[in-house]
Every structure is written in structure tokens, then in C-alpha cells.
Length: 284
Image (cartoon, rainbow, N blue to C red; front, side):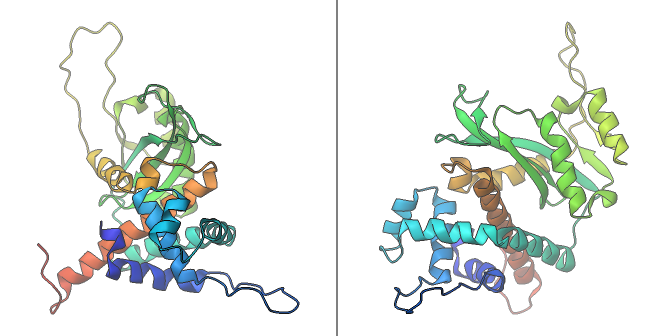
């Protein structure tokens, strides 16, 4: 997986390192054990995100250089300091500065995943035999770059998550630049159209739902560009911990999404650099 390649890991680490909080040494005698390096903890968090294994297994994969308790504590410490949110915002800003976000076509859709351990923000998944799951609703630009998302239980409909998803896009100051919004037919309701119109989003591509009792099963449908967000959901699902999440707090899942999105954007930037660098490796 590209996320664990040395050049990608090093690029993300150089971005996240300045954001990490300075540890406080409150021991009166200064005789505590040496602090485990942030670099090793970052690698452990990434291994778990990519593979989806437990913290105990991650500890074993790191040859017991760091305990699972330390990895969880360091993750929570970074979440409290807003490290993952800042990392995601810096990655998005870097992409916008170097390549440029294309907001002429924006696609929004939800994606349901497993959450066997339950916890807050989970619910019965209607497409997985009512097993516990969670979902995200995400908005992407024309190239599939994630702009904003909302997370909830798998039982929540995409319609419910549409407003918080757009609110996150608006928080980043990107809502005014959107020209066309692509949605699937599950959003085909007057309430959805009026809701988007109130936000200044009038150019919509929403396939019409088949009316109850209709006999024509071959009505023409505008496909639009919904495949963009579907490809982004596929990129995110490649991360094992997102695909089968074992955390029990919504803010843990949000942090994982931030980290995964940062890696997705970093990979895009590295590919862009290699493509236009005269002495770089060829793109195949």
C-alpha cells in the first residue's frame, strides 16, 4: 500500500512533527523512564490504520518497542491538541496551492463500514444484516479530493448527513466556489433541493427516483459524476481500520479519517511532483 512507502511516510511525518505538543515533565526527581519517541508512535498509529489490527497486535508488529497503552495514550494526546485536524487542513491547503481544487463539479455520497465493537456513533447496518456499523458522508472535488465529511451510525440515511457535510465544507470556506453538485437518486426530494438552494447551490445533478407504481423500468437517468466520490470511498476503504473499525468513540474515527485523507492527498502531491520533475522517475 502506498501509505506505508518510505517517501510518503516521511513527507507526512515532516508535516505532523511541528504540530505535536511539547511533553510536560512533571516528575519531581526526573527519574522516570525515557519517553517513547513520537516517530515510533506515529508509525504504530499508521500500521494500525492501514492494517486494521488491534493495538496489541500493533505492539507485536513493532517488536514490543512500544506498548499498546502508550500508543493509545499518544493518539489521545494528539487528538486533544488538534494535531490530526491541523494535518488534514494543511494537506488540503497544500493541494489547493500546488495543484488547485476543482470545485466546478462536487460529488457527495455516504459509505457504510463495519463497527463490530459498537460504541457511540454506530448503529444497525441495513446492508449488512443489521450488524453494527458506522458510516461517513463525504464531499469531494472534481479530482476526488475529500473536502469535508460527517460521520454517524450506519443506520442514518444520507439525507440526514447532507447538511452537516455541507456545513463542514462551508467551514473551510469552499461552499461559495461550488458550481455543480452531483448526488444519487436517494437525494431526490423537494426538501433536499430547497435545502441546497438556500445555500446557493442551484445547479444539481440528481437522478429521478422511480415513482411508486410506475411501469416504465427504463427511464433515462443522468449519471453525472457520482463515480468521483465512489472512487474516493474506495481509497478510504483500503484502510483496514476504516473498513472494520474497532474504536468506540466518534472522535477516534474522525482522527483516522483525517490521517487517511492526509495520506491520500500526500500521495497525489508526490505523483504530481514525479510527473513534472524532469529528473524524476517515470510514471507508469
